[in-house]
Image 1 (cartoon, rainbow, N blue to C red):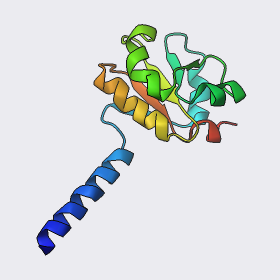
Image 2 (image 1 turned 90 degrees about the vertical axis):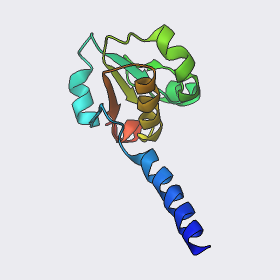
Image 3 (image 1 turned 180 degrees about the vertical axis):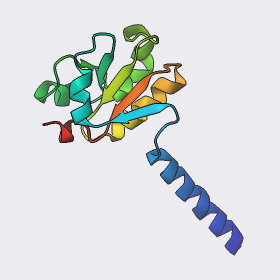
Length: 120
Protein backbone atom coordinates (compact mmCIF):
# COMPACT_ATOMS: atom_id res chain seq x y z
CA UNK A 1 0.00 0.00 0.00
CA UNK A 2 2.85 2.42 0.79
CA UNK A 3 4.34 1.89 -2.67
CA UNK A 4 1.09 2.97 -4.31
CA UNK A 5 1.02 6.16 -2.24
CA UNK A 6 4.64 6.94 -3.16
CA UNK A 7 3.90 6.26 -6.81
CA UNK A 8 0.86 8.55 -6.78
CA UNK A 9 2.85 11.31 -5.07
CA UNK A 10 5.69 10.90 -7.60
CA UNK A 11 3.28 11.12 -10.54
CA UNK A 12 1.59 14.17 -9.05
CA UNK A 13 4.94 15.92 -8.48
CA UNK A 14 6.10 15.06 -12.01
CA UNK A 15 2.96 16.61 -13.50
CA UNK A 16 3.35 19.77 -11.42
CA UNK A 17 7.04 20.18 -12.27
CA UNK A 18 6.45 19.43 -15.95
CA UNK A 19 3.95 22.28 -16.15
CA UNK A 20 6.64 24.80 -15.17
CA UNK A 21 9.48 23.44 -17.28
CA UNK A 22 10.30 25.25 -20.51
CA UNK A 23 8.94 23.68 -23.67
CA UNK A 24 11.49 22.05 -25.96
CA UNK A 25 12.27 24.31 -28.90
CA UNK A 26 10.96 27.48 -27.22
CA UNK A 27 13.27 30.43 -26.70
CA UNK A 28 12.93 32.54 -23.56
CA UNK A 29 13.83 36.22 -23.61
CA UNK A 30 13.77 39.03 -21.06
CA UNK A 31 11.76 42.21 -21.50
CA UNK A 32 15.05 44.00 -22.17
CA UNK A 33 15.73 41.63 -25.06
CA UNK A 34 12.14 42.12 -26.23
CA UNK A 35 12.80 45.82 -26.81
CA UNK A 36 15.32 44.88 -29.51
CA UNK A 37 12.90 42.41 -31.12
CA UNK A 38 10.03 44.90 -31.47
CA UNK A 39 11.62 46.56 -34.50
CA UNK A 40 11.59 43.29 -36.50
CA UNK A 41 8.57 43.38 -38.82
CA UNK A 42 9.04 39.68 -39.70
CA UNK A 43 8.01 38.62 -36.20
CA UNK A 44 4.52 38.26 -34.76
CA UNK A 45 3.79 39.57 -31.29
CA UNK A 46 0.96 38.01 -29.28
CA UNK A 47 -0.39 39.05 -25.88
CA UNK A 48 -2.40 36.16 -24.38
CA UNK A 49 -3.96 38.11 -21.50
CA UNK A 50 -7.68 38.82 -21.32
CA UNK A 51 -9.08 41.71 -23.40
CA UNK A 52 -9.60 43.73 -20.18
CA UNK A 53 -5.96 43.28 -19.14
CA UNK A 54 -4.79 44.10 -22.67
CA UNK A 55 -6.92 47.25 -22.84
CA UNK A 56 -5.55 48.42 -19.49
CA UNK A 57 -1.92 48.29 -20.63
CA UNK A 58 -0.17 46.70 -23.59
CA UNK A 59 2.89 47.01 -25.76
CA UNK A 60 2.37 48.60 -29.17
CA UNK A 61 2.59 46.02 -31.93
CA UNK A 62 1.21 43.14 -29.89
CA UNK A 63 -2.00 41.44 -31.01
CA UNK A 64 -4.39 40.31 -28.27
CA UNK A 65 -5.32 36.64 -28.58
CA UNK A 66 -6.46 35.47 -25.14
CA UNK A 67 -4.99 32.13 -24.04
CA UNK A 68 -8.43 30.51 -23.97
CA UNK A 69 -8.91 31.38 -27.68
CA UNK A 70 -5.37 30.69 -28.86
CA UNK A 71 -5.84 27.11 -30.09
CA UNK A 72 -8.83 28.14 -32.23
CA UNK A 73 -7.44 31.48 -33.46
CA UNK A 74 -3.73 30.81 -34.01
CA UNK A 75 -3.99 29.07 -37.37
CA UNK A 76 -6.27 31.80 -38.74
CA UNK A 77 -4.46 34.82 -37.32
CA UNK A 78 -0.80 33.78 -37.27
CA UNK A 79 1.73 32.70 -39.88
CA UNK A 80 3.56 29.45 -39.05
CA UNK A 81 6.54 30.59 -41.13
CA UNK A 82 7.25 33.60 -38.89
CA UNK A 83 8.50 33.66 -35.32
CA UNK A 84 5.82 34.23 -32.67
CA UNK A 85 6.78 36.14 -29.52
CA UNK A 86 4.30 35.62 -26.68
CA UNK A 87 3.71 37.70 -23.54
CA UNK A 88 1.21 37.70 -20.66
CA UNK A 89 1.16 39.33 -17.23
CA UNK A 90 3.76 37.19 -15.43
CA UNK A 91 5.06 34.68 -17.95
CA UNK A 92 2.93 31.71 -16.87
CA UNK A 93 0.12 31.97 -19.43
CA UNK A 94 2.60 32.77 -22.18
CA UNK A 95 4.50 29.61 -21.24
CA UNK A 96 1.27 27.64 -21.68
CA UNK A 97 0.68 29.47 -24.96
CA UNK A 98 4.09 28.42 -26.29
CA UNK A 99 3.18 24.78 -25.64
CA UNK A 100 -0.10 25.22 -27.54
CA UNK A 101 1.67 26.88 -30.47
CA UNK A 102 4.32 24.14 -30.65
CA UNK A 103 1.57 21.47 -30.71
CA UNK A 104 -0.11 23.37 -33.56
CA UNK A 105 3.11 23.20 -35.59
CA UNK A 106 4.62 26.63 -35.03
CA UNK A 107 8.37 26.06 -35.09
CA UNK A 108 9.71 29.48 -34.03
CA UNK A 109 8.15 30.38 -30.68
CA UNK A 110 9.53 32.73 -28.02
CA UNK A 111 8.28 33.37 -24.49
CA UNK A 112 8.84 36.70 -22.69
CA UNK A 113 10.01 35.88 -19.15
CA UNK A 114 8.33 37.93 -16.45
CA UNK A 115 5.68 39.23 -18.83
CA UNK A 116 4.14 42.67 -18.50
CA UNK A 117 5.07 42.71 -14.81
CA UNK A 118 8.73 42.94 -15.86
CA UNK A 119 8.11 45.47 -18.67
CA UNK A 120 9.57 48.89 -17.85
